[in-house]
Image (cartoon, rainbow, N blue to C red; front, top):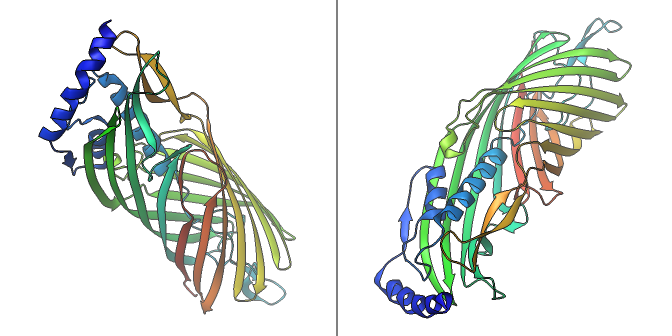
Length: 395
């Protein structure tokens, strides 16, 4: 009986309030923008005692997933495209490889004693999905309210969210010894977000919030050291230690806000024009611990041209999957609230990268690649394009 009276009352109240109020909008930090989009109510709809906790749980879940994903995207290899060794037969220093190396997968070769290289790479990403949910087409249901004796929710909220990033990474690498390199990668990130939340109550639509935000700044700097453990007859083993420093603003999703340490084991094999490289890395600290595995094949199609194909995989242990949870409404009997939470399972992702490195002149390299996600987990973008240049100083 109470539920029946409730249903008769709320529709006219909602329609009157819809005419009386305007949608809210905001512009602030990116985390504040997400909170605003998911919790602000410009129009009080029929659920006069709405379960606000469900919106807060959904907000915290999405914010954490976005922050974890955006701050653990792989940085380009800091190793230079040119590697040199002293050739005893020629009595001079010569290139140690016909290949200019992969993009994200490290190779065991080091640059060579006293060799210094610098470079810059620009990467553009347009994020379109979070797990199985589409972010851009208005079908992403964040919360819903449903009578248990009805087949469909009577009160549904959907989020439309456009997230884009442009990253410029400056990097440098120096050979301290024929077997020891040190490198640094400094990313500068521009992240934009535009979104709206629509409430649909009994077929009537209410724009509850609309917001835009953007952030530009320094990302988390990575400092690396690489030691070549074995280098003979086209085969090599190496070890990298990489520290990511919390140099970015985590409230704007530009960085993790916590330092992390990544250890990478590298195996390489090269025969003539073809080379293969494999990496296995483990990360501690940061927002999520995990492992990553990468493999690359490079083909020296011409002395000035290297073609590259790579697979990039990772497993993050503290992320989980985005799922719907149904719980009893906090105040209404016979009514359930649907909200988004994360499971305790790990996040596994895989991407394919294809591109080329061209020796434009002397020790200048021009780089281009495109990466495509191969799995449906995590935060995913449309194909990501990277452009870059690499310069090695001559001695």
